[in-house]
Image (cartoon, rainbow, N blue to C red; front, side):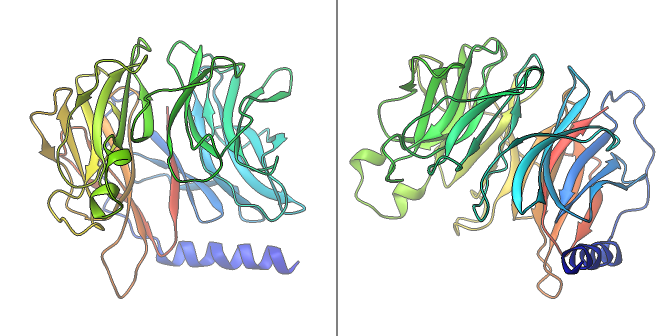
Length: 356
């Protein structure tokens, strides 16, 4: 009873602090008209103009990290509701037909928000510390079979290749957390190997033909003494076999948020206009690292996501209001125009996912 009252109190706080723009017309040509996201322990949906906001699930449990799949019209999400053990659940986009799929961790352990659907919609991949170290697992949705595909080290942030044949993930492969880099394996865990054999690398994004990977990292990390330069990261594109590495940025800390739908542009965050190691804004550039355009002036970007049709970008951020610190969720056209405040609250916003 005490736990339920805490969640209800949290809901009252959320609604009392809700702050949205005046509702603007919806672009009817946009295929994806809504967003799912979590605010604290609650999963919400909103129209892309900020209207029709409603609770999908949560309030009596801690639900977060929704990910939508267009192949089966299902949403997978994390929830802490059974004996304080985080599990992965699926549901319809309206919150109905919630089904527990698998325990994602054990009681008292933290968890990564990194579940991903396979391109076919038949499987999900995620990381979990339930074996003692954070390992990568694949779960068969239809047959309810879970398989651990990594065995050593600390592993997280798995990403399916676009053809569904391989998985890229970030691993130290030794368990010391000293050098995290991208590894690639078959979906059964076979043929595991480092994507690159030097430096540190993170945040892999496969191209549509699965022949290239967009990522960020510091490829000189092995050779540099530990100082502020070892913490700086740049954005690269390379062939999926690790050859033909092309460096796209040469300044500050940069992190990619993926390719545009036509793969002509890259969305990324960067501190290039602040150089204080804290503040970052959203930018786009072409795949040669040219024609860089700044899209936001928030200074504290957390995450961003292209809409699947490439017309819009949704992003969440920390607010700069020192009197009422919190987070916000906005969207805009992919060229940075028509920015709209969708949700602003003194709580954590995360788990952005586009839905029709």
